[in-house]
Image (cartoon, rainbow, N blue to C red):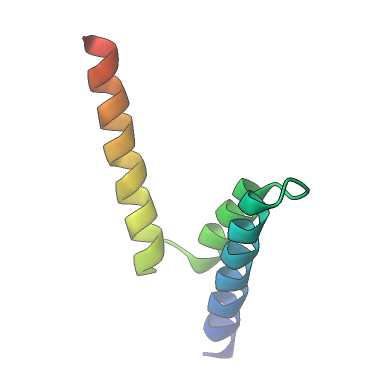
Length: 67
């Protein structure tokens, strides 16, 4: 129980740090966002939303390349 709560807090913190990193030119934001999503795990709704977004984006790119 404690480890899952700790993982969620750490994952959300890494995602927040990644968002700040995208705004600041000093830090690479994508790295922290990916680490945070990985820390949350596949069962978290935020990770599922990110996965669905990537799938839709990939389909859109594939359709554009066919034209």
